[in-house]
Length: 372
Image (cartoon, rainbow, N blue to C red; front, side, top):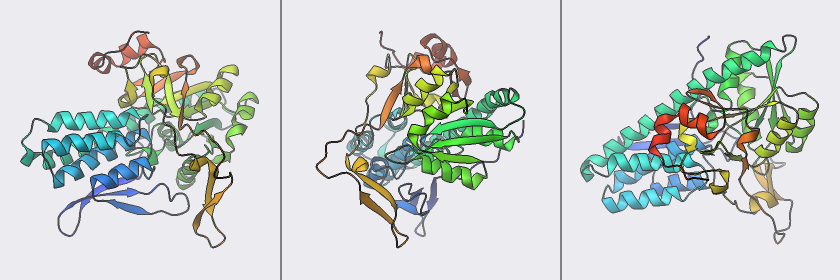
């Protein structure tokens, strides 16, 4: 198997001219129109970046929170500051479990250290979380590539037809991505493929996937979300690949709103529906998807559309009256019965309680799953 080269990273840590630690993020609210790096200097900067989705994607949210905690402790490493920083960051977005996981790991590592040792330890632990994410994503890509290679063998005379939803590429992680990691690995292995990219309204995060694929030279076509069912029922899709923000003990998956509709169409047509996520996305303390909190986003995300104005600058255009009632959930729940397999760093796994417990025994034993 050909070794894939690392992808770019949307977050980087370095020292400024005064030898102070800094964190720079690629501002994803500016993409795909402009590539802008933004400096995070304080806890408030990190919390805001997560909340308004300047960083997004469950793994990257967790890593950004870890660095946000390190930024906070650089200024005040007291017990009170540590606990308050964890609370503030954890409240930024409720659905992605990687956020809470990273913060609890940081707190457990730091709380018993003397305050004067916490800052250096926080930066070191945040670095460790970031590098672990990169390694996990590389493994997800390798395991997913094998699945795609087997699918491609059944269609030797044409490119493999894949479908994505939202963005689960390197922009959503530290490196490579989750659902896009197998795509990148398959492309590097010269497996002919084409990706149907669902635009994913109202945030249009599919545009980020299209931007990534264009830069990587991978054939793709951007589609309206509602075209997905038609393509699947016309047998023009061999597999759907999505990421996840939280996976319950029974295998139910919380992912970007619209994922469940694709899973329903895929199940009707016996099309593979794969979820790619690191084990940090599992929350075995929750019995099922019914227990997963669903983030309700600001209605203005739905009432306004974003794009380029006539002067070539990013702008917002109102498409729905300000007083119109709207409902804007950020995620939906795909039942485990609709998931062909969950691809983690340990390989593909059936989406059911027994298989997940066997596949991730350490994770299972460290969390107490509720009974149904």
